[in-house]
Image (cartoon, rainbow, N blue to C red; front, top):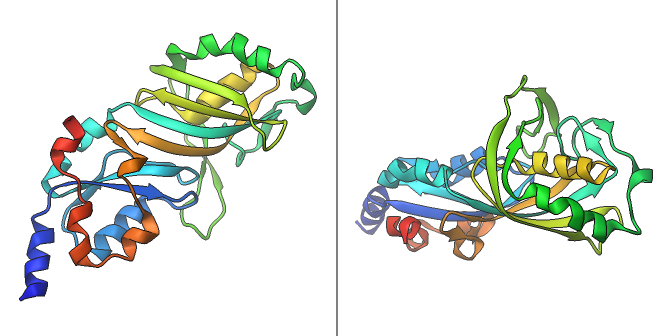
Length: 244
């Protein structure tokens, strides 16, 4: 009877589950694995997360799925790194080189150059997504370059963008950003590299916030799958969390 009661409790759950997705794992695999592990009838998500990216993936449980579109349209925050001297057809380091020049990296005046171009990447901006995308269909497979066709320019908004040299490498920059839902991080990086004059490609990306959710709300993916059904319900955040 106890097992039946737990199953009924899970069946009636409604809310949000914040997961810290590891890099290299397709977000659809996370949704499928969590749904299967906890025998959930209805499990959606509040916005996809690229395979190469890590960080906050908000899953939507039960009747809370009616609010999934609100989450998809919410502002989000990112942290990541970009590789200077490289421009690719996918705007990230997994694509084919189509420009960029290591010799053109302004190492001596890099902080001043960053400061001079940053104002152009704040506020309303126009972006055009690259027609090519680096897609990993499963964790064991490499990245495949897919032609997605031409895309139209669109307007998005950057609330905050901080960029600084990385201590890890002289050709790497770290960035943190708060943006509207439509901003494409890799395209933002590509544009920033072009403005610097040397090219740049997205190297790492981590989503740290989505709407009113942050990584502080999240449970690690492996830790989640190590839980039993009796431990699942307390991890589901109430619907009101999205609107507080």
